[in-house]
Amino acid sequence: MANDRGKSGAQSGLMRISTLNLTPSTEYLRSASSRAPPSSDAPRSRPAWDSAPGGGVGRVFGYGSRVTEFAQPLREQDVASDPFEQFARWFAEAGEAVIRAPEAAAVATATPDGAPSLRMVLVKQTSEPAFVFFSNYDSRKGRELAANPRAALLFHWDALGRQVRLEGVVERLAAAASAEYVRSRPRGSQLSALASHQSRPVVDRETLEARVEELAACYAGRELPVPDFWGGYRLLPDSFEFWQHREDRLHDRLLYTRADPPPGWKLVRLAP
Image 1 (cartoon, rainbow, N blue to C red):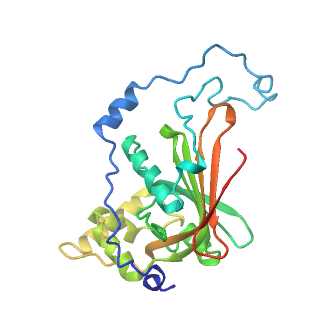
Image 2 (spheres, rainbow, N blue to C red):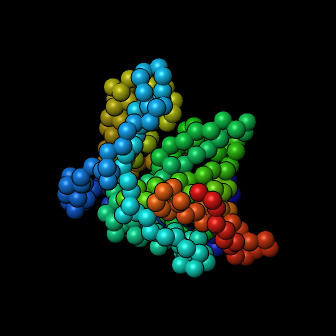
Image 3 (cartoon, one colour):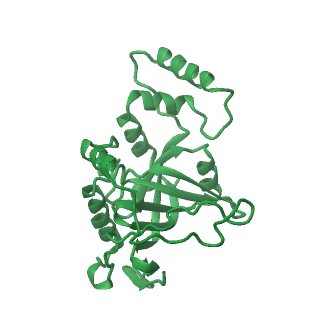
């Protein structure tokens, strides 16, 4: 395992990981229940390729809707020179927009021969130099990262018409830092992590629940052990893309890549 502390310098455990409330707020639930479905200025006919069964694609998701309130410009002169700072700005705005779990992201991994897989995770730290998430090391993502230690993260904040894409090398978090995070989790979550051989077949749910009950009884009144097969990963980005919805598909896309020679970042605009 890579020396996590040596590479991050300032990192010491998970003291910079903030505790995030993942329960939808009353404000979020109220605003979600009152939202009207998107509408168009005028009815439009269905395209020819969305026709009878067997003759077209089928249902067209979102056809006829417009997204105008999202269409805020993303201009080079307005963004930070450091993508971590720019991410912090957008992340704060996602929180202010009452987006539930703005730290949720899709993480993509791949086997050495290029077969991809994708799933959602909760990113627990987003400060330079890394983005941190946790998993079972024996899960599919864990096995793929062991064989091919690169990944991509995608944050999608639909309420703002925004996406952030990151790509980079992934390494395991230091064992002490992983243990500190494990200890901060609710006891039920710790029991579930101990009981579950993630991504492996299980006979039925009852078997899994019985294993949780067995572990709960075994460690009643005692601190639970930290499983050696469960812990954190650090994605160290070498690229960030900030994507902003604009009207008529002329979206804004700004890409940060590592400067050559370092330090610093290079910023370019991509065609939508």
